[in-house]
Image (tube, rainbow, N blue to C red; front, side, top):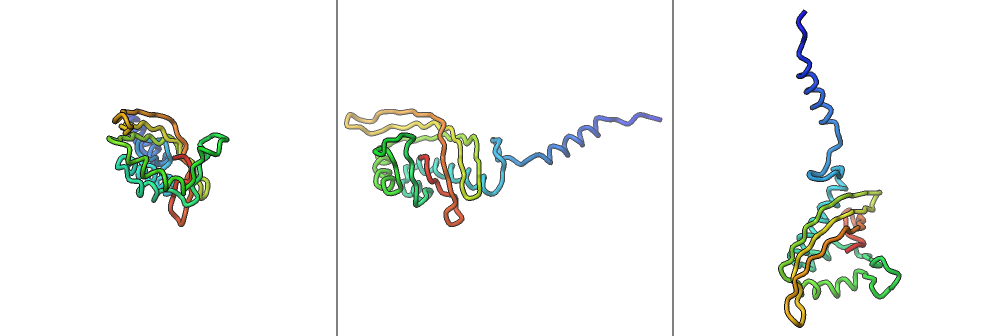
Length: 158
């Protein structure tokens, strides 16, 4: 009796098992399903709107009841939808050369609510009375999202 090669069987089994693993959003460890993909897309649409300094584009992604307490007990830095509508166009107009790099690290969906952990780096120049000042910021950020009329919208965290 001649021995059969084992390697082809092992390779076939490995391929079959890897195909059974959970599908991930490419380049991430985030499970790829309808909700996580939609949240992921909202985040990247937000990134493009910021780079374009498109206040209307950003606001289109924000829930009507948006509210962010900025992580402090001081109500003077709270931001709701109305205040965002007032301040965002002017804030974006003062920026030049905006580039935003976003890495979505995690998305957790619980029914019609989601939390996304995002690492961002942004580069821009801001106009001041003394001229344009270059800036670079980076941080880990948590965005809260919720479904509004079947669409994912940002409800806090901008």
